[in-house]
Image (cartoon, rainbow, N blue to C red; front, side, top):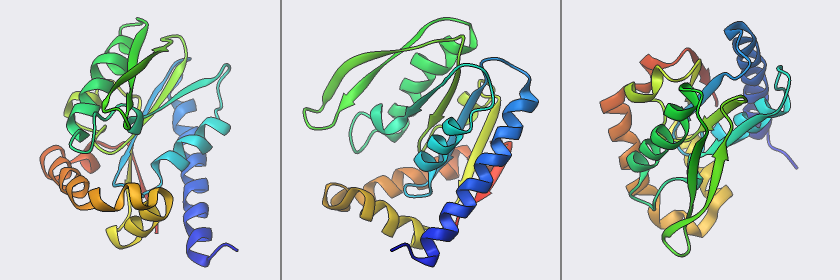
Length: 193
């Protein structure tokens, strides 16, 4: 059974996906780049998935979660740099990009994935919206959501695997917000309860 809180989050994300779909159409490009940032548990992955379902352009969109790129629990900045170098810069130059999935169990890079520059791409994850990435994205989304709401959602999603790492990850997110001010770089700010 869904709670009122779950329904409010779902409604906010659905509304956001509709707005961002309009933003994508306004770009007038066949291969737009969308980046979605916000704290852990804000709804980035759910929003990216819904946006992919509503994708308004011909062809498919590539969805890449930074959770697949972060090199471990201290890797928020490194994950964003990996996305910048392997995905965003090549895509912006019309070149094939590549990124390696991080194997969280083994603590090392795993298989490689290609990013087609002819297709649109959505990159979502904490830390992705920063001065070095902003000019490479057509639509830049910041999800505003209180930690008191985000933390229970994130821990319900990832459970005991995440619980011991919450504080160190949250500290990296705070440093990112203070240093990079992603909210000021956003073209679309979404509030999620």
